[in-house]
Length: 132
Image (tube, rainbow, N blue to C red):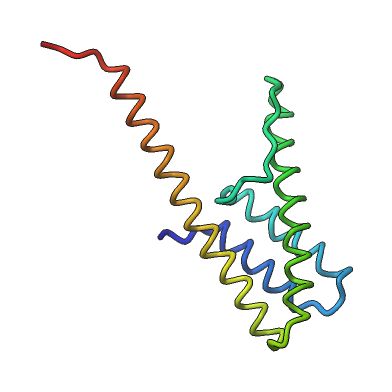
């Protein structure tokens, strides 16, 4: 597993947000963490990312960014609130949640890259004419 800098930024953002006692201060921290992580590398799990059918470059760049960052910030806001309500001490639960996000993000990114490499190899094999 290769730990990526974007995953670390997202995980640290979640950890710091979980440590914030006020929910109104958590969402800007999460938004900043996911925004910074996006520019370093995209998240491994892109289930909440919308890709527009348009060929306009500004839509193809901004829509996936906006949907991914906002949806993951909302999901992690709910997760940090839930984790803070457990019996675990807040610093421990914050580290567990942030660390889990780093690991899951990195593993899913590795799997996505392996899938893309397999598709590319499969595509290259069909495109090359056979010589006798």
